[in-house]
Image 1: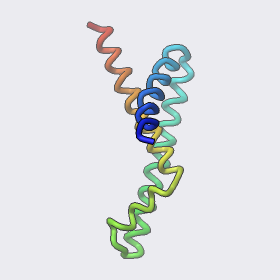
Image 2: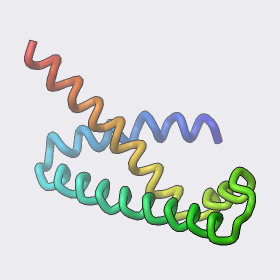
Image 3: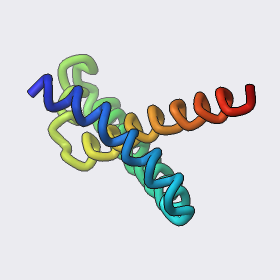
Image 4: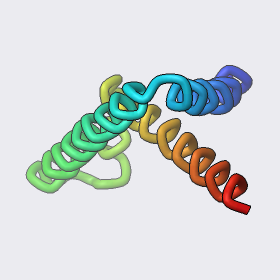
Length: 98
């Protein structure tokens, strides 16, 4: 499983980078998906914290239940890949300038 996670973190941002060079519309979709993912990630996080504060439960043990939410994991995973994609893109732009 660890090898698969590492490969995904290497391959997905690279594919996003190539896709953004080949198709301008990919860039727009990557940004739109990032915005939607950020909202989903934030809303699920805020609702989980709100439930814990409302129920007055132990924060450190109950907050980990949010990791069972597949939508939370998917949106967080996309944001991670998107962040790496943006860093690679920015690095390559800086290298081309010099």
